[in-house]
Length: 390
Ligand code: COS
Image 1 (spheres, rainbow, N blue to C red):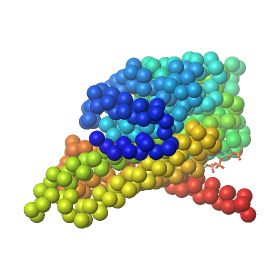
Image 2: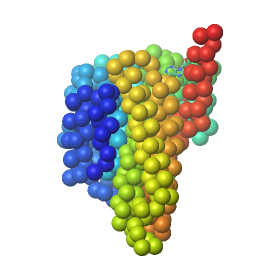
Image 3: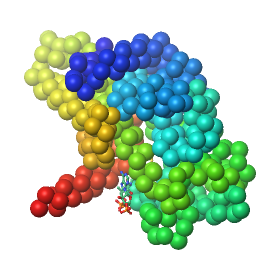
Image 4: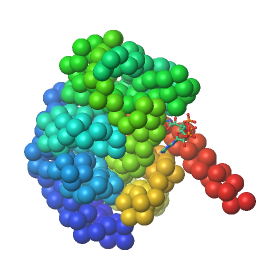
């Protein structure tokens, strides 16, 4: 059992503690502790199971059957941390239902919200967030997909890539350029359904830790104008607001992977005989374990600080979420690498837990804003505060 003492920190209420225990027990019984051979089928099954048993209530507001009045960041983070400890694809399935529907929660018209959000909660519709393009990854404002108004519709043209749930999603929140305004100002968000004419999955992308991922093609893709989310030109800010919530939760997922690595390392270190003692008797091992445990607590403090500021203080958390994501993902990479080292040859043997974690953690330092983007965001906020105080 992982260290759960963090749940007594003042960031949490009883409902958070209950969620952590109940979801851990559920995952133990319902989520395999191994990779799926077929990630598409696995992901579909996980979304269905998470919906059936009520866990997706944490990604939509109460008005659509959600567990909290508004989506609660601490609950999302606890859910991701817990699921990631068991199986990274389970965390992915949960998180993508949230990220893919967040722009609808934030800015969808009531009828658009009513069309998608209950199905997201039930796990009967799979959501996706289609922002990145081949030439617009970190530099979102450079995206080139267009959406042209045409009567009571919009016609979308362009290509999106590295889209999570690409190929299995029922709908995609697609960001496209609607106006002549340059950079970030001319972008709007739309809901595109997988069976809309002109929408196709161009190519599936294979990852070192398999998750559904694809390149999407929009070719004269015509959708009703009501499926635009928020005002025209608001798309960039909408994407950033959705990412503010989910970046802190990526930190939580990294934390879950790191906690699992420490658990595995502790089991190994206390059982592996070497030179007449066990691995954990060596001070070098103890130094590694100490750094791993400290890195986990430091990451947890930043992660749950970001979630608490958003939920309780109701302040913008761009800076806090960036600090959490940067620290937790980079630290988890180091912790998992140490766990691999403590396992020796077993650590690089296909099929061991630490080998799986080693592949799983890598993408978290890249998606939803690479570490370098988080550094940029933190530096900008720090400099802006300094200017204001002068
Ligand atoms: N919430 C609300 N508004 C925000 C915001 C946020 N978190 N961040 C920026 N904005 C606003 C700014 O205030 C600015 O508004 P005005 O035009 O009214 O002044 C506008 O959005 C543009 O912001 P900025 O000038 O900072 O945009 P940049 O093009 O410099 O981009 C980064 C900033 C690099 C931070 C952004 O492009 C980014 O996050 N990139 C990574 C994208 C990403 O995560 N990709 C992964 C996709 S999902 S796997």
